[in-house]
Image (cartoon, rainbow, N blue to C red; front, side, top):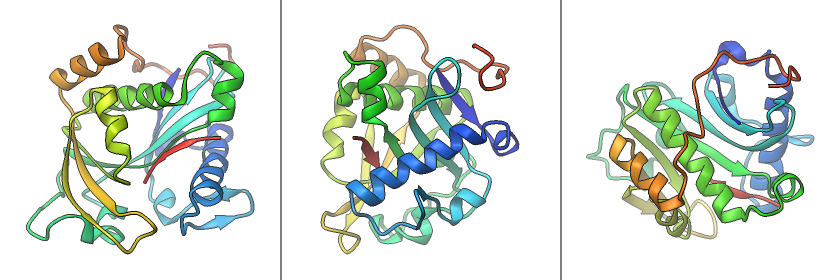
Length: 221
């Protein structure tokens, strides 16, 4: 199942969020070697303290995490402007209520292999992208801005997502970092579902049950 966790629900879903930060440490610090803030076995930064929303992919009991994305409005502080400003032209204004930043997107390959052995990692990541499009469309978001390494574009194409590269820059790591604008629309959603062969909605707005009430990784900057 896919859940959108907002700031006021953080305490209620603290166990899932704890898994998010541990997964991010394994992906971004251990595997990718990024210069991120690590404390013990978790990766958290200042933006996690600014009341972001999190799209979580978890089991039906809301106890095991399979993937996550952090979402923040561009009307407030963002990695896009504070860290990756050189990745898009100075003439571009990417601040608007309908434009949100998506960061720290990753999946737990080990958990997916254990619980969904027939699901390949690329397809799992594409499914999380599709759920992200559904969530964004459901919440009035028209564009999701993300920074990513160039090789990820092939995966976005495979998922049927439409991303316009606004620019790229070096100096952040061993590979260039791109800035992309992902279109969120009914047309793109239909295109992604057709490309992935998924007709039913992955995400549904719902009244969330309390956790337990029965109801190695890939990454995006």
